[in-house]
Length: 393
Image (cartoon, rainbow, N blue to C red; front, side, top):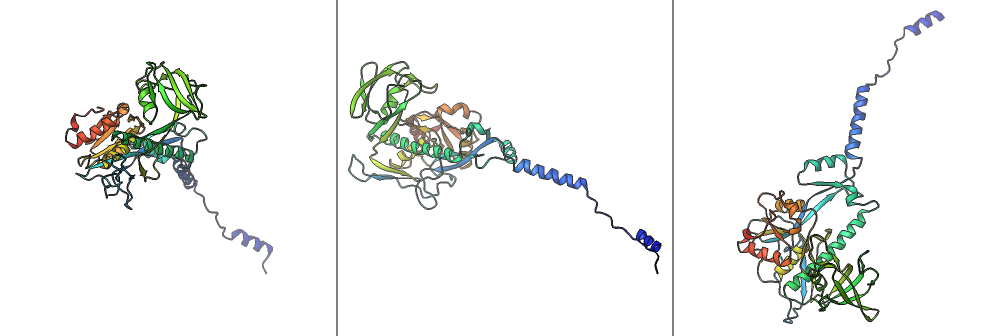
């Protein structure tokens, strides 16, 4: 028999199992890596990045053969179907090839929208990219702004730019484009505030010298005010609820980059186009392609290749009276054009200060302020005299 003492000794002498040893160094390292991953890839940062986006040859078609725009209808002067050059068959996003004439609109790609915020790793990559620009999130998306709201605003500006580009191009070609111009309201604090009403149809503008200018097209209110000094008494003839009224008030100063003055009212324009021009671009917003749309319409509706086999990119808003306006992201657009093979770039004169010092090697930038100047520039490039054109440098 085994005594209790023997059992106790046996118990005391039995081998014991050691508990696993936890390496605090390994655990700390793992936690540090997880924290780093969260900081780099999970936590959003309050910035938006703009970088060179795709460029599109507006004279071409997409991969399915659908042109960037189509023109249909009857020439009111001849009564025959409108004559136009066929769109280029190459895909419109394909980079330019040597000797291939193109008119390329340019875009900016943006990262950091409300539903796709940037992380720290993406921010570092943008900081190291010399062609990207970083801006505060709030400056792009004020508090409460959704991506859908921003996209809708951008698409609305694109639709407006397509309308203004059509009117400006057709009037450049000598076509009449009648329009109804309606007052949508007064700019708060302007002299028109409390005088005009939403829905007033603008029929005429009388300048201080007593000259009456009938408003029968879209361009008249804009072109006329570029010649009128600020503080001039203007008389508007409007139709309100079927009655004609005369409304008088002083004009207000224009912006620092514009000549003349402004009426201080918001206008909407309903043009009656003699032909139907339809654009077939999806997912691209903003107003900055207006000038290139106008140039493309003029090129397609005049015989031959206006570019002279040169790849010409450009950007700029287009007003109803043919003025080229400033845009955003000019530096990114220069690099996008260079990447896709453009040799020339048409830039709004009001953006020149942002162009200087940021022109890629091999890209020649021409400064333009009107559609007339832009057409002249394209034709000068075609005939080999582009080097005489004004630049931003």
